[in-house]
Length: 117
Image 1: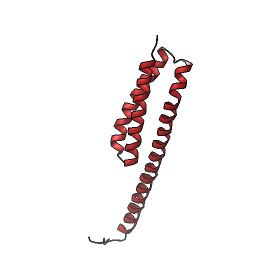
Image 2: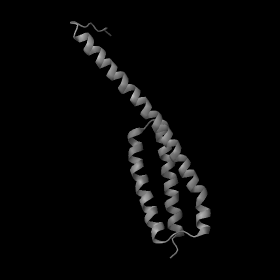
Image 3: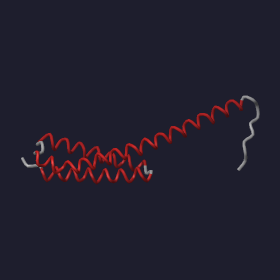
Image 4: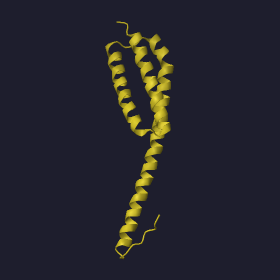
């Protein structure tokens, strides 16, 4: 069974999705990234089923290798951007926790006066 056209289509879909995910991550569109990631996972599952049914020939693997490399590079960059976002969120949580701790400590002292806007 020749699944080359379907395989090329799925790889192209994965590449397009990975480009979209990278753009969303770079733009800080985290909610949209999660939605796009679900489509990406679905495409990966389709690829797994397709290759399980009929593994690609050596020639097809060579043709798809640059596309796969590009997909993996995009994934690495998305992961890097997600790590930066996680670090940013961890810092915000830490600051919030410290602020609560300070407010709690001063609150035990009696009246706490906060600056007005």
